[in-house]
Amino acid sequence: KDDAGSEGEARDGDSAEAGSAEAEAKEQGSGDPPKEEKSVPFNLDASEYIMSLSEADRSHLIKDWSRYSYSETKDGISYIHFEPAVPQPPGTFLIFPEWGGTDRVTGFARMASDEKWDSYVFLPTPELSSMRPSGNYSEEYLSKSAKAYTDYVRDACATAESSGGKIIIAVSGRSASWLLSMLKTGLLESPAALVLINAQYPEEKTVSDMAQTVAALKYPVLDLVIGPENGWLKASAEARRHEAGKKGSECFSQAKTGTPEAAERKLRGWLKKNIGR
Image (cartoon, rainbow, N blue to C red; front, side, top):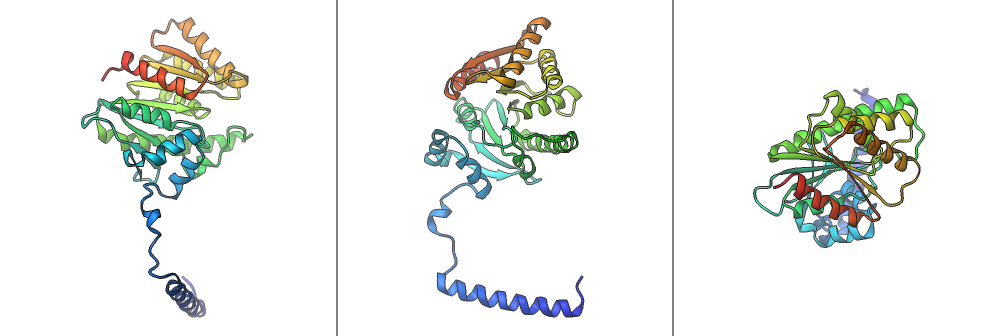
């Protein structure tokens, strides 16, 4: 690929780098990673994600790390796996966080694993992680990102299918608009149930489309609204409640709570009542 002169320079550079690395290794000893790093069950990407969580979630994960594992799909999508409390779980609980991946969702996965579900949190790809809920993005950029999101969700679902049983999907924030679009257009197979976590979008037509899609679903839907309702979260939640009532949906249920912990309790009761084990 390079000419002879470039190859010679590259070899000289490699030799110099190798000598430098060897000298550094002698200074530092064996070069093995510190013992405490070996005990951490997550790689750098997962650790960065965990450090972005609330202190309560973070301390729980660090304290009880033996319950969880970190891995990647065949296409390189990172995920945290929450082992079920029984050898034969009734199915799989998949969580897709908000674009930026900093919202609190690990508590829901932890609760689902306590309730005997095989639970996963699929971390956003680097491209999706760079997006922020407050960002003002062009339609072209959003379209490209939606395609990336579709690939991300489908790969995640294919990975989880090996567990067998029912599949419950939970999605958070603005990315719920993309997942609902996948369900509406058939790009994603219908799950046994759907959980929305503060689902919203800062555009009236999308809010309306999301509400209509949710109202038409023929399987259980839990719409969790956490914290103070204001702005687009309030408008989105009200639109879904209104549309589901207008359509007479018996599958839709909305629960408003003040804290994530209260929302987790709502989800626990809803799972027992609507999905069974």
